[in-house]
Length: 306
Image 1 (cartoon, rainbow, N blue to C red):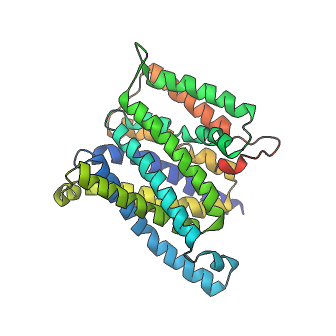
Image 2: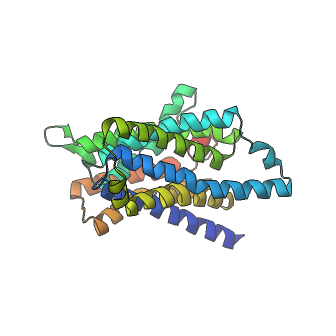
Image 3: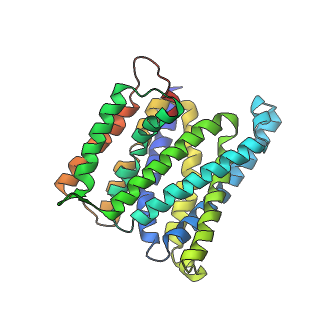
């Protein structure tokens, strides 16, 4: 059992590493194509990559005649969930991609991670209780964001603001997943959401950009990394790993994504943070970690944290 948990935790660390370093791939990719074109390519590839996993797991479930076999059929709930999650994913990834044109990969990683704090706060609108600890974390995160993004004259970097908006949409995305995932197969819904986000991004790229096959081929490395590894492989690793480890520990490990984004940005893109920005990152990360620490008593919003 301990070996399974160790393997699962190692898979989650790898997942966080892939997601964190994907911010670099997203930044590099826009040297060749526009934000909409990049997102269209990566999400469609992500949806395709998940298909083999879906076919294999479905065959195993039917063969073993497990109860899960009754939940893997395409139905209205699965389609609706995939479409709504895809729209939210499109919005979040679009603001994130545009934000990366004006901010660093590391800052984008930390600001995006604020969705972990925003999710339970948005839970108010669906009548979820928000403990005092969350509000304290919100204040810590605001202080961190101020140091990270607010410049002299109380101005905010355009890229940081776009990324903050992205965090709100990813929070909505998490709430939608929380609502639909217990009713359907998570990987199937994820594949649908990738295709939905990809199709919307493709339409937007045809309207607002001038996508060319030659440019996409020039960006093949970052596109494949973001599509195959970040969307397809990392998501599958997360689904498999979380079956054999504690959900709180899993969330804490996955929050390392922001740290890996800073490290990857520094090592590959030579991006660095000032002392003020570094302190801001530490405050944001502290707020994220504290948010995910278990309470002594179970609360209604627990299901929203993972």
